[in-house]
Length: 80
Length: 191
Image (tube, rainbow over the protein chains, first blue to last red):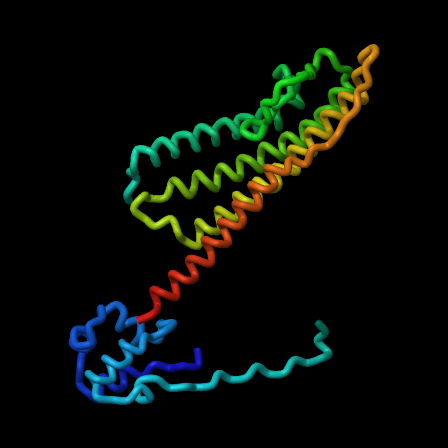
């Protein structure tokens, strides 16, 4: 997925642990871990708002768009 | 591992196991017993669970009443179709057995179970065609070999629409399960 979660970087800057952030945001550590490791499929606005509030940052500090490399064009001689 | 369940689940497991053993024995009978002629073959309704119990004329075939050539023809036509139908029914029951054998505390909505339901649906679908093939082969055999004075013997083929419909319904349930699990996965990975 071309959306990269940079939560670990912001957490290091803010010197906050996963447990502490989970408690302050009000979600489970398991869910925060899913978000931190980039396994999440979606994030609720309410969760994003709480994380930004507790870390004092903007959504753009946590989420980054990195375009996926385009697939090389196929050689027409390879056939269908 | 949790192996217990509610009484209804335990009864269902036992019934599925009985059906499984019955179909497995019927498969063995059709695959080995009938060609060898060691058992008295009366293949009127040879495969369990899929046979119809309509009232009417019942015609049986026994090896003693047929020539060796007729017996070979009978086994290679009716026997093969019957074996195919029994095996496909066995596959369907085996899929159900695997689903109900899972620990009862575990959610049944898993990718593996959706795959099993789909396989069961396909097996039921195949069994409908096998049953039609068996009935057709049996009727053709009787029509070709039995002469009744003053009566005309012919055959018609019944495709077994209800079984095909059942197979389609099971396939639809499998697809709903698969889609529901995808939604559940999305929900689980939403923080």
